Image 1 (tube, rainbow, N blue to C red):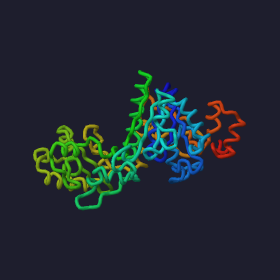
Image 2: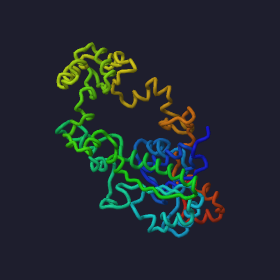
Image 3: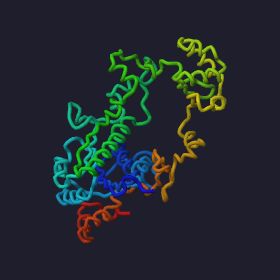
Image 4: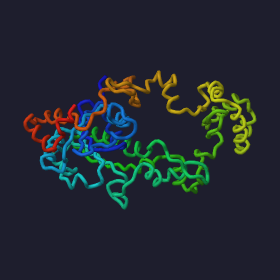
Length: 391
């Protein structure tokens, strides 16, 4: 398989989930992603969670397929090494607070003058300007700011903490990768790169949901848990089973009729507008079923009904196995989620496990023409990674 971004070099100066996921997406499309880390802690995502092969499990998920080098951007020789590396790059992605790279002398304007076709992406919490530009935050703070968190949970209850970092993955991850690809296409067509700035908070705040659309159209913002697709519609809701839960999203009439037929509740079709009646009948009916019985009853493809599963069940499901949700990487003692797309009918093969800090410093610097003697000296003085960290 020829991947769409083969031949593209990306310098990844990001840390933690948003930037790592964004640049992993680029790597999954075939880009040569080089993580540029500092000589101190580097990307401390390596310390998160269960340790597998000496590094955090989440690090293995979002940094696989990349190479890692260590450069001290606060040292003059380190900045020169980075600029030489940037001269060979197509993309630079960074997640510092606005202005940090400018103060170090390796910001966008410097890089653009040296390489006009370069694509530069800066991702930050709230964007490069505005009252919150330098505010520290994490995903939970972003969804709180955005308005999304307010609408999670039942009326009058405390909103639940989302177990998945929605703003990080969309605002920092997907939006950044999409902007980079768009600018790469322009650079290929015109020879002129450009700058993309993405804000993690906007990944949650600017989602084009029904709730947001109705609000902007003049409808009053509903109470928590009572928006049309946030708990108000009995045909788009979650119901308790004897041993779990089931989701019903039978919005279209044909799906609703099928659900009522399978439940042997024809009256629900006739009284679909009586929401309280419908909700009570569905609550009572589903309470008589087990998860296994619900799966069997709604095995028909045209119902929009699914039993709630945990991740273990989802990954073990026949569909996930046939679709190849999980992949193995040689030498890594855990599976990883597959790239979430097909290219020419197949998922891209996995390449390499996530790198250790500075694992590829000598390899990448040698590609730039640095001699062994110079590398030995720079590593001895910690301008680049010490030789001991090389794999």
